[in-house]
Amino acid sequence: MLLGNIQADALRNYLQADAAYLKEFTNLYALLFQNE
Image 1: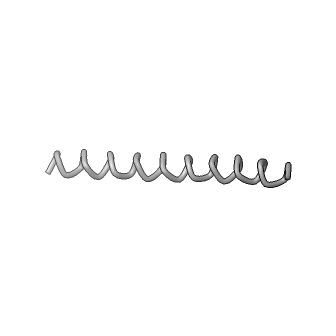
Image 2 (image 1 turned 180 degrees about the vertical axis):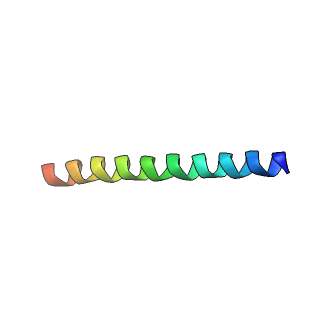
């Protein structure tokens, strides 16, 4: 049960990090696109 909770927390943290990375990547892409 505890292992399942740890895996759920790890997955949640991973998804949050992935969303943050995607947001940053989108911002950088928008900046590059504006410069052209």
